Structures are given as C-alpha cells and as structure tokens.
Amino acid sequence: MAEDITQEEWQELIVKDDNAVILDVRTEEEVEDGFIPNMLNIDIRQGQGFLDEVEKLDKSKNYYVYCRSGARSAQACSLMNQMGFETTYNLIGGFMNWDGEIAE
Image (tube, rainbow, N blue to C red):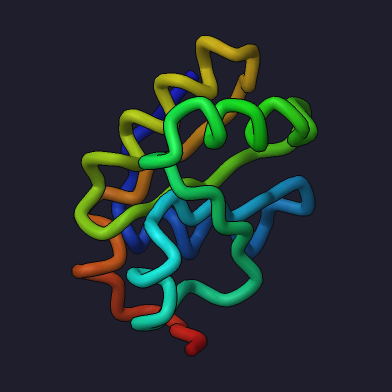
C-alpha cells in the first residue's frame, strides 16, 4: 500500500527501519543537483525501462520514494503497488521542499 508521508514522518520512520530503501525516481540531470544520501536512482520517465529495473528489486523491502515535487513519486508508488510491492512511502512535496541531509 502506498502512503503519502511528510518529511518529518519520513525522517522518523527511516531511522527505525532496517528494511528501508530510498528510491529517487528523478532524471539523471535532476540528481546532479543533489539528492538524499544512500538512494537508488531509477528514472520513472524511462517508462518500460523503469518498470524493468523496478521488477528486479526486492519486494519485501520498504521503499521511500521521492521525486522533485511528489507527483512522479506518487505515480511510482502506485505502479510499484500494482507490481506487488507491499510498502511504499511517497515524500509529500518532494526534493524541492526537503531540508534534511543532501549529498551531491
């Protein structure tokens, strides 16, 4: 099931989650502007390429998904749930509003 969570909820949940995977669904160019550390990047705009890469992921993990504003990540969560991923969290407001740790 997909759940929309705030940045505060994201940071609270992820520190306690040993099963967490951070998934960045933005383009390579967007990622170059900075990203949340320790993320996995699969660009949702690649369409079938995105689905093929996501299909290889471990469905038993908990996925924390973000994009620039929260729209593409919501779409990604929905697709992942249809593919059998049980737990996906969508970051409300996306990277644009993120004020946590950033890597470049």
